[in-house]
Amino acid sequence: MARNANGRSSIYEDAEGVWHGWVTVGVKANGKPDRRHRRGKTSKEVTEKVKDLERLRDEGRTPTLGQKPSVRKWFLFWLENVAPLTASEATITNVYRPKVINRIIPRIGEHRLDRLEPEHLEMFYSDLKRSGLSSKTILDYHRMITRALKMAHRRKLVAFNVATLIDAPSHVDTEIEPLLQDDARAILDQASTLRNGARWSVAFALGLRQAEALGMRWRYVDLEKGQMRVFQLKRSAFGHGCDDPVACVRARHRATCGPDCTGHARYCPQRVGGDWEFRKPKGRKTRPVPIPDPLIPLLKAHKARQATERLAAGETWEDRDLVFCRLDGRPIDPRDDWGAWKSLLESAHVPHARLHDARHTAATLLLEQGVDIRVVQEILGHSSIAVTKRYTHVTSRLARDAADRMGKALWG
Image (tube, rainbow, N blue to C red; front, side, top):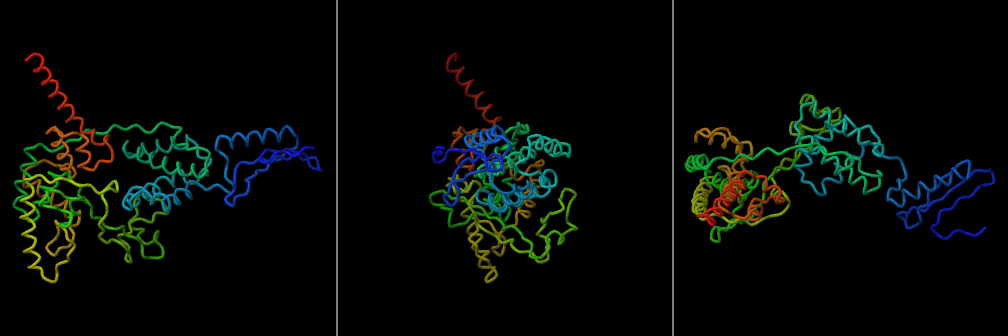
């Protein structure tokens, strides 16, 4: 009998009447051919099995060898080893980990990864909706699951990404509501009397995120050229220093915490981490930002006052080169910064507004002054132009203005 060419599938009968089939599906890690075996009682049965395996090979869906991991095992691996390659520590700690530990593992964690069906995800999302989660949060779950299963597919742990077989949960972004110009000016008038009052001028004029404003350093602020580079100041995540993180802060667990919850590390008596760190801003890209001329003398006056405080503090001064800091030079805690914002709103008689609304106000004012939307995207550090386009109330108003100008040009 003629021998098959290298790489071709083969089917034969052994001395005991059992039929065997061998299919070459690729190359092993050591460079040798990866040949898979199929067996059956008849030639027809084995032939069908060989054809099925060849079809999976040609479609790039060859099953991997060994026992398939559960959803629990894969998501924990993804959380610890894959996600940190692209996501920030804060995103993993505050967003991904709670979702995986508290919701995904308790609901669908015991399914074998390659046997996870679209219906399992649809029922999971329905449960999330019934539990009262917002449509935006449910969409965030879907995006994270899709990302994790995409990596599993690349590694051939699953034949395909089941999250792509269902429609993403629907969500409509709420319209951004910036502060009115009069309210912004009232806030700045009140801020001018405060010790770190220039911090709020920066918020409105430059549209910095909270961590970016609190992370401003003098070495990156050029008051002569009127330009600065943006970084951010963040605390490193707290970690458990004890031997049993699950039992350590059991009294702190919430109803949504799963049985394996290892969170709430900030309450651990032997906690580690929590140090202040300067990092690149969201999007991992530092950006130059022009400083408006009226803001420059405010920052110069602030720098002079800070020099006086530094002399008064003497050896207790902790030099981190911060533009905005405490009386001893240490960083301002974000919670204290938020409290200062709330007090500022009260003294300015401005209704409730989020701290982040100052950033929205900056974007709105830039667009209203006719600044190109891509320039606004660059100044604010938006990841895509789609984020900047959320300011539809501004673009609609500008479009109305353009229509009015066209009407005057044509008909006077």
